[in-house]
Image (cartoon, rainbow, N blue to C red):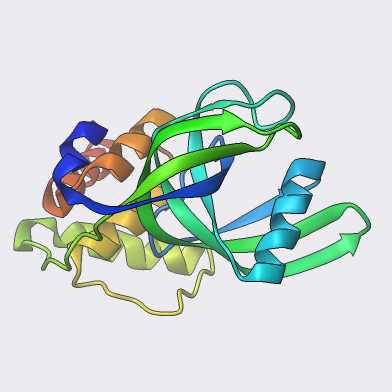
Length: 202
C-alpha cells in the first residue's frame, strides 16, 4: 500500500535509526517504551543528548528482542518527550509521533541497530469529518475518557486526527494498523474504522 504515498515524498533523504515494534505509532500519538537492550539504550541516550529522533516501525518478520527484525517500510519518526530510569540499565520513555517516513533501504550496525535511508512523507491535510462518520468522533471521546488519556490537544472535527487516534486505540491486528498508517485518504480510513465499529457493536 505504501506505493500510494509515492507522490507525497519530500526530496530530502536522510539516515534514521529504527526501533521495530509489534505495534504502530501514528503521527501525533504518544507511546510508552521500556528500553533495556543495549542498542536501544545507546539510541535513547543519543537522542536525549542531541535532541534527535528515530523511526518507530512495525515488524514484518522477527521479534522485538534479539536478532534485527525485518521492518515495514513505512513508519513514523519519533522523539522522546518524557523519560525515567527506575533502575540501572532500564529506560522508561514516552515518544511522540511526528511525520511518516518510508525507508528505501536499511542495514544492521555491528550492535544490531537498524539504520535506514528514509524519505519523509508529507503530512495529511486536516479534513472535516463527513456527517455520516460522526460516530467515530463520539467513540473516540469515550475511549479517551475510559483510558484516562488526556491528549495535549484535541481535534474531534478533523478526520485525520480522529482516524489516527482510533487506529491506535482499537484492537486491530498489526497488519491492519500498518495498512491504516500507510493509507493517505483520511475519509477512507475513517470509513474502514466506522465499519469495524458498527460490526462490533452488534
